[in-house]
Image (cartoon, rainbow, N blue to C red; front, side, top):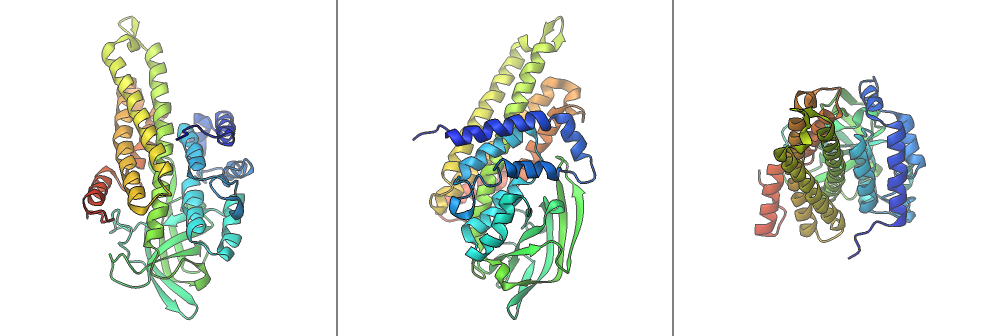
Length: 385
């Protein structure tokens, strides 16, 4: 198997790396994160111009003919630069639903908008009581003629403050945790009855609590068939897991390099602290954890198109590795930097915050250990509650 990146993927990586280095340095990011909007629409437009938003989509869908590996390349660079713009919510999740389940009309209307950057999507799936169970839904969608009426509450919808549209999971039939009866809708964020409470997250992103009160959407905005959307939701979430694992790998690499460089310059007892064997061992272990994470991320990325059980096991295995490694790398980076490692002025604390949040996105270590075990023992996707 050829594990080398294509010439086009290397060009994307080089172009994005240069752009982040020149226009997304740490101080610029801090000012953006602390601004009222929390992001730069002009930077999003540059990403679209570079073709980054089109990279994971086929030429038939208006993309560049890429796949999940292209998203991996982009997200790894985003992790190195601590980029906050909503690539995963809009391109991986919003675009993923349309790519895998959207009709020709939906792709024409919405996917082209995502690729051009004119539309920004957010994935509204989590609910306060749901933990990491994608089928645990109290948000309902009741048929009304050719339309549906949505009522409910979605929690911590990342990227929603910047979104023009929401991809919403809702129950059209069945009981609260049934695997059947789950449907997916595209809802304009400015639709009547949609209200949001926006807030910054600890890692510098923005999210919203989203409330739906008698929100009427056309039946044409349903992705896929009614009540059968859970497998589609699980597939898109696994793709989002692969993308966030890639982001974590970029963040871990940046933390390791920063820590090694600091250990060469910081002196104690008249010598660089990097000469102390115990710290050398810690930094070698950080490198090993990053390399293991990178291997697991590549593994899940390459298995996203395989059968359902293989894909799910790969996603959970990678998520466990990323969660454990991210914690190890972040804690050691802070430890070696000392007290300044937790200050807002140093990028180390921001990388650690982001890795901590990634551990809890789309299921934490405990959740995915249980999921992997259930899949291995039973051969079916039964997530432990």
